[in-house]
Amino acid sequence: MAGAWHGRWCWEKLTPLLEKKSHRVITPELAGMNGDQAELPLDPLSNWADQIAEISREQADPVVLVGHSRAGLVISEVAERVPDKLGVLVYLSAYLLKNGQTLYEVAQRAENAAGFAAAVEFRDDGTARFKQEYLAELLYNDASDEDREIASQSLVLEPTASFTTPVRLTNDKFGRIPKAFVECAWDNAIPPALQQAMQEASRVDIRYRLESGHSPFFSAPMDLMDALEGIATQLNL
Image (cartoon, rainbow, N blue to C red):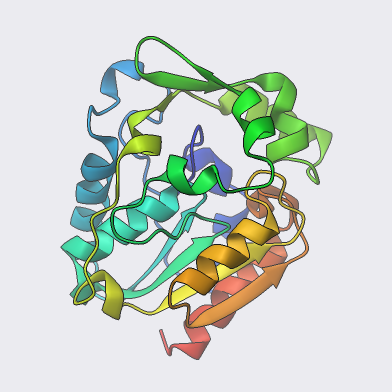
């Protein structure tokens, strides 16, 4: 699943690479993240987790559930709903939180917290806009100009409740699912120090490190594919 401000369009490079390797890939669009603000849920974290849990229930094989950035919260909540359907939770430079934490709370601990806050416009209608002038520096620092242009034309509004809603997780559901973390070494949005701190605070079974910025689905799709394949292979999925 894509992170804040992003939709399924961000997986367009990675998906065909995985499909050529005979993997079945599903890239659902989270409710409201297609640019239609009227469809944004009031309780996005719960709504999105319900949405992905329903898709997971329909799968015959154990699901490799990938969440990028903010979507780390979503995949954690999905584990509470359908733990028996999931083979592994993959946090792609994503927020791996503990029970009761919020994205905002953890993000404030990052070395770049003030700088990242300057890149976000919080609107009166309960949404947040990512300012275009910070896109290259924070989200796409190692991407091509072409990819940056695609992103600049595709980012949508994010419901601010996704930043302030605490995750509700238990050891007997979320806690028993294998977890993998794909760290992005050049990430200017979620700095490596924060990525590592979140891994140390929770049980992570498999770790990969990519020499990439925050968006390897554009800047390093082959390396990301190899990481995902490696995770699945280690768990016999």
